[in-house]
Structures are given as structure tokens and as C-alpha cells.
Length: 418
Image 1: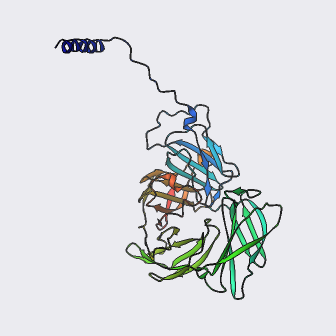
Image 2: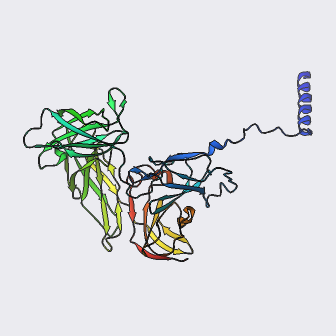
């Protein structure tokens, strides 16, 4: 009992001392924020290519409210990308809008929060890099009645054209390719052999060889070819919104670089395709449907890499978005996921505007950020949405606009007042 009483007394004294203390509260142990913790950087893409010498402007996202007190201090909120599309900001809001001037396009992407975004702005930037002339030889030689097509993959592979007889022109990202892994290269050349006049889906042989080349030297390569014996049968079932007509299904093949691809087949609904299982090949399906009432209203599957081990691939096409109104500088569109509002000037002046947003309402892209005139006059408004893309960051990279289903509404004309 004595021990218990003593413990109670001590406990009460300690509690009383804590409650009656007049000492100041302890100081925070959290370190002061380092401004480099707010830095962002990445690559701007126009289609599959880095956007060279684009001007990038960032500002806090007005709708989030998370950066109302953001002050960049002396750090610039404008950056010009280099020839590889690279940009970097020392400090940035936690949630921000990014406006990009590239050529005659002004593109705003609203509500980024990632620190390494690779924004995709659309457009048609031509491929950049170095060109290597490659003379391929097949081993064993190409049999009579057979054809050969060539593909390339790897971090350095950009473009490929030509044929076995006249030679190949390979576009690479750097002056020379480099060794990676166990005897591989940053550019790999593939050859696929199939019946002349037939489909590459009926391939009978293939070859693969790493390329160790540089731009100032022509290269002669021998591609060892082995037979392809395995195959599979595949079919596709496409579901479109009511009132839409499904177009013939397009099948293509590449080896990891979508810009170096080849059509393989055009199929009707549920039509079966016999596919040779070419090692390292990537088979792509693309389905499209148009509105029976207006052919300008289109829904697309995007480029889907399908698994040849599944005999049936089901594809669901999304419904189109609904452009609603434009008034007082605010554009409204009903849709799901990322929505793009494309505004093309009809009076022969001004920039093409693209607004990418997750919100129903958005202000226009602002050319005055780049000392250009404010938009005014008639514009053609076309709205597209990507319903399964729920973060702006997912629209990034060279394939950001084509690797997810999308739908486009019919265009309409609006007038932007001064």
C-alpha cells in the first residue's frame, strides 16, 4: 500500500507541474524550406519529338488555392527550352499552370503538381537527330518470292526509311550509338521476312542486330535471320456509343518506337487475324467510330498494344465531349478526364490556342504572357477529351496524346471580344 500511495503522489505532482508551467512552447524542429525543393524540370514534347526553343511560363493554379502566398522572389517564371526540349525552373508553385509558346501555338496545361512533368502540346514537330546510312545484308539471303521490312528500337532510334536493295537511312538521337547491357546498343535493327505482296502478319523469319554506328560513317551490317514458327489467332470486339459507326479496325506492328511502324491488316468486327509471333514485336490495334449524324464527331481507342495470347480483345470507345459555351473569356465544356479546347483563328491572324484542363470551366490560353496580342476575333472551337486520363501529368511524353482513348466533338465558331 505504501508503494501505491507514493506513486499516486508523485504522479499528481508531475501532472500539476505540467499544467501550471509558464515556460514558452518548444521551437519547431522542422528545417526551413529549401527553395530547390520547389524546383521542376522536364521535356516539352510536340507529338513524338522534343519541342526545341519553346518558351515556357508557369504560374500558380488559380483553382487549387494551395499557393496563394507563393512568391518566386528573383527566380524567373519564364524559360526557353534547349534544342532537346529541356526546361527547368528553380522554384515553382506546388500546383501550377504551364503556358507554352511553340511556333504559332500557345498551349496552357492547367493544374500540374508533379515536379518532373513532360508536357505534350500536340503539333507536328519534325524528327531531329543525326542520319546514318546503313547497308543491311541478310544471313541467309532473302529467298525468292519473299520481302523484308526493317524496324529500329532503342533510346537512340528516331526514324528509319529505305529497303534492302537501296539501303537504309537511320535517324539517331545522338551523334553515335552507345553500348548498353550485355552486348546491346542504344539502337537495334530488326528485319522481318514475309511473303512478297502479303501481310507482315504472316512473317516467316526475323533477325535482330545491335547497331554501333556514328553519323559521319556509313555502316554495313549483317543481320542473322532465324525462322518464326509460332503463331496465334486474334480477333477484336469494338463497342461504340449509340449512333456511332465502327470503322475498319487497323492493325500495325513496331518494335517499341511507334514512329517506326508498319501496317499489318485491316479487319472487320470479329474478323480473325492470323499473327506470326515475331520475337520483340509489338502489335498495335486502333479502333475508330464516327457519328452517323455528323462524321466530324469521332471517338478513338488510341494505340493499344494487344496481347497475342488472348484470342479476343474487347475495346470500348468513349462518348464525345459536349462543348457548351464561351462567354466573358471563359470556355465551358462537359466531359470526363482531361479536356482540350482547340481554338484556331479564322480571320488570318493571331495564335492557335490550346487549353488542356480537368475542369469544366477554364479561361483561355494567354498570348500576352509572351508579349503577343491578346486573342480577338473569330475562332474555330474543337473540343477533345481523354476520359481515362485523370491527371495532367499522364498527358506527357512522346505518346501522351495517343496511348489512351479519346473523343472529339464537332467544331463550332466562337467570337472572342476585345
